[in-house]
Image 1 (cartoon, protein in one colour):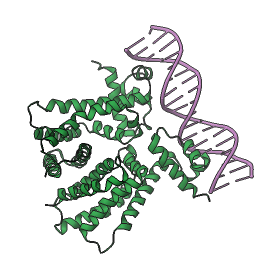
Image 2 (spheres, rainbow over the protein chains, first blue to last red):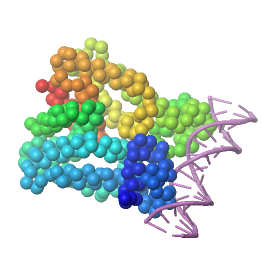
Image 3 (cartoon, protein in one colour):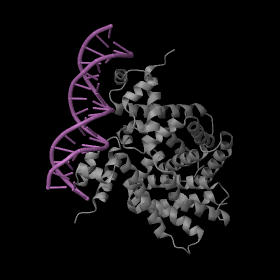
Amino acid sequence: MPMDKQQQIFDSALKLFVEFGFHGTPTSKIAKEAGVSNGTLFHYFGTKEELIKELYVAVKEELNRFLASKIKANDSVEIKLKKVYLYSVYWALEHQEKFHYIQQIHFSPHISQISESVLHDQVQTHLALIDEAKAQNIIKNLPTDLVYMLAMSQITGIYNYAATLAVNKRKPVIDTGYSMFWDMITE
Amino acid sequence: MPMDKQQQIFDSALKLFVEFGFHGTPTSKIAKEAGVSNGTLFHYFGTKEELIKELYVAVKEELNRFLASKIKANDSVEIKLKKVYLYSVYWALEHQEKFHYIQQIHFSPHISQISESVLHDQVQTHLALIDEAKAQNIIKNLPTDLVYMLAMSQITGIYNYAATLAVNKRKPVIDTGYSMFWDMITE
DNA sequence: GTCTATATCCAGATAGAC
DNA sequence: GTCTATCTGGATATAGAC
């Protein structure tokens, strides 16, 4: 039962890019790993560069869909914030290659080639949530972008640490991380 | 007065790697930008890979020398911690390409090719400082690695945000960032 | 140590049959 | 849509004169 070939190429590219980097991963290896021909890869993706970018967008959308699926419309703002934080860390731990790929792109020149509007769409939900919390005086009146940056970086830090622990030792660390973060942004 | 050619190659490589990535930067361009021939580049660095790694080590050492120069032996542990945090952010803002390069390597497969002992030497001073603070009951009794991760990620977050601000608007944000961090790791 | 010239290889990308 | 075969450029790295 052959999977969607585009998906197989995505999967193989993800694995190889994370392990060997963009420079160390020829398209021929991606095609081979995916079990398709070189020509097929270029049928789905015009250039290697496009593959890199589309993979990023696909991964980021998957994360956002996951987070959205965990949020209920009638959750309070506090609950929503907490869920976004905690489920981000859990998702990262469950999909380490994907999370690593997001970081890899984020700290690479490729990020500047991804259109502003795409990047904007990806964060707008989160920014709106922070604005809502500020409006309700639930969190300190800090710049929204700053709160977002702090959240993202703290999630990354907690993830990096938790990933070094045995699976059953992670929860207390993550919970502690969240309460530290929460104390940081509330009075 | 021609600079040391190895240094010129480092400077050019840094600039180009940050702007175009490893994949997008041929050695020929680095040599050209540095004003030396392709052959000269390979006289100083056996391979491109070595250049990438040695550049990382050189930049990291520069940061550590800078931080060390700011710490006085008779500073209290609190002062030392604060200085390391604040001067890390200031250094990052003053040397954005270098800081960006550190991140780029950190989230790339190249990091795993840099010897354990080199990486260890780079962080041991900081870990020792955290241990000292724990021993003196100045900060909470959290795992040392966790505190280090949180510090690094928070520094990165504050840097990323501060870098978007006008130079004269940065100080309050950085100070606020530090006090949030401090509150996070103390009772 | 530095350069010019060049070898060698393999990458990304295409053409065209099926 | 998928493959095989292939082109072409340019990349890393070397040889050897100065």
